[in-house]
Length: 180
Image (cartoon, rainbow, N blue to C red; front, side, top):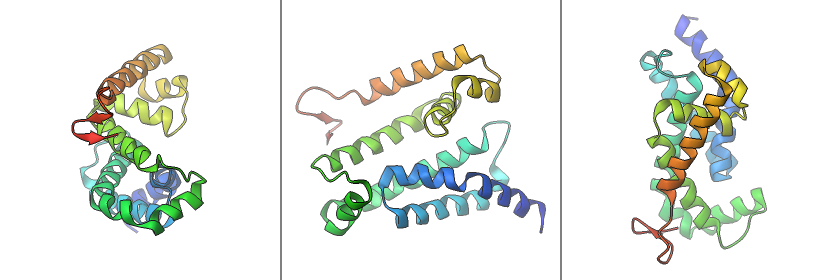
């Protein structure tokens, strides 16, 4: 087995479950989550030579790929999902979240992913490490060679920036022509 395959195997074994969970908790569908997770790792394998460990952590790179796959999934399936009873009932059964706000929550998830991808790389890393890897500020600081106080400040500023970008205009619940 060559070095690329060994390295990829380590990446896959270390991060498959995290990426799967990240995707699953966005769409609440096990089969589609498996498919998208496979797509993420296929893209990672194909582009492994482009990954630069000096620019980002492997987790950040994988989450960015996952965010892009989710964004594409939402775009290509949004109309189908709105009208497919089977898709919605499967989600409801999986999550016990059957209510009228499912479309609204999905729209917010899309907006959140878009805003997350607009953050500077370091800020995005910190947000992902905090909320998707459930790391403490101290753990993040050790990984990024920052003080835990600095991590908290960057996280606070990042969340404030995201909040500003997600702020809904109070004129009937629309944002950039979208109902939210």
